[in-house]
Image (cartoon, rainbow, N blue to C red):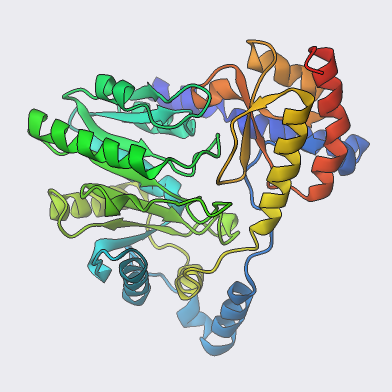
Length: 396
């Protein structure tokens, strides 16, 4: 017999990709310039020049036999050391090479940590809106995801709601800031309040509660907003990072997770993660790309282009009468739909080839997500369609 939960997960697909595939088919029929596809959060800006320079240096200086050989399961020692040195220097927390595991992006981190932390009956928790796969990770290991609401309108942390949501079964709390899908950057005071709450709950329940910091967007912040490095304020934090977004390398699948030396059960947690990676086959990240990424730590793409996109789309939609939370990071706009049924709004928008994703997928009905990591011209060409919808729904 095949596990029915796994069958359901495979058959359900991913609504983001389903809508994106529809857009691809429409582009073939009527031309890509006539489809306004805001579905996929895939970077549209070239990687920083140092990435190509570093890649070419490796290709020119290292033999193919050595460059493309199997890497150690947890990453090259030199790569892990570079990551540890960078984190230590940048954030003032001492990391060592043996505190770092190189991974296939943050998805691997989240899947592995969910398996490790929930395998003995614990539960996961996160703040809505949230990335849809968190729930699938938890349910795939026979557990569940507690969805904690955030403050209405702002989507900042609601500590009273968090205190009500945390139970003795809570083992991990996934915190994603800057947030997908809202673009909200959680404020330091809220995160420090959360850390204090978790410290108190750990003492009350007699076991660790780990923050899993899902941070692939932490370098994508605008207007001098602070992107807090969560291990700075909460000891039991596993930092999960990907080079996909800030460095525009989504297809290379390179990231890492880092463990504070002084976190509870650090050695067992680290070893269990290595064991699950082995069991799942998440080993031997691309030999070349993990070395390239480590040599380019701190470099980012020209994110000013995303800011220009944000300013145009946010400014235009709010002028038309749409309500949107102001995104201070990432590259998403979360738009309140002018009717309660967000999926119905998406279907209506699709009739005019405007493709957005319903917020139901992110635990927040009544909103749609628009990924503005597209070329500026796509946004400009889409505005008449947005305006048509605004008039149709009586917004302007």
